Image (cartoon, rainbow, N blue to C red; front, side, top):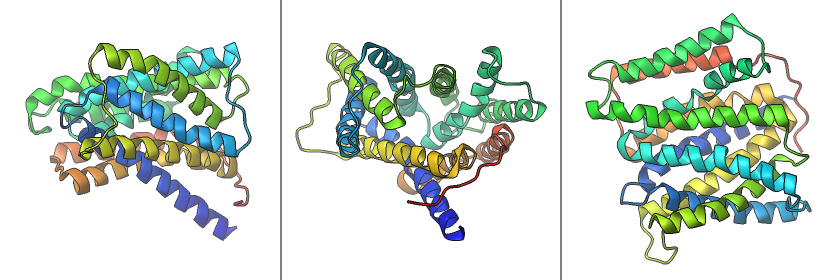
Length: 301
């Protein structure tokens, strides 16, 4: 059992590292003029290719019924197209580490949405976590010396769009299910539909990114981000089925921590004491909003 837990922890850390590196990759992707629709198109397309191969190896069919297509369309919109459009736009103006901290708000935003839908019960502990998360954002926004450029503050609301959509997505899936599809099928279906949706938007806005060489850092960042996301998501779903959702939910801390670490190592970002204080508050808020039900792990296989 101890060996099993060591394996689970290693996979959890790897998932956090993969998801955390997507924020510095996003910053690099927009650094030389690439914009959101072009990046999202290739994110969908590359993800669809990898997931199609994975799904075929599992012997599972591609979701094709009308209800499946409708569901995957919704997931493509609220899970990637809309939030990532905001994220890539914010990444032009904000440090990568700030984006990682802001994304930690997902479970905190999800809590009041779940309450409004009657899907969760009021909890003082989780309300306190939400308030700590909001306090963390205020520590980034209010002090004059919190950000390298005071003008960056105006882009914080844009960065908040992504965690809001992700929170909506989580509650949507919790309420309505996945139409009988497993997580890989859902992500594959959403990637295929998303590719179709993003293609005309990319063409109409003139944001198409040529796949032909030469490839620079932004091209490699798009490829790396797409692969890291698919890898992390697939392993995360596997981990939920083996070690339980409560254990797997701890990846939130690692995503934030690795997001800051990768930003420092790859981009050389530095932060004011206000930002570090915001990080501490955000992690404390995460600790309070996380579920605490016991979960029994299953053996690794």
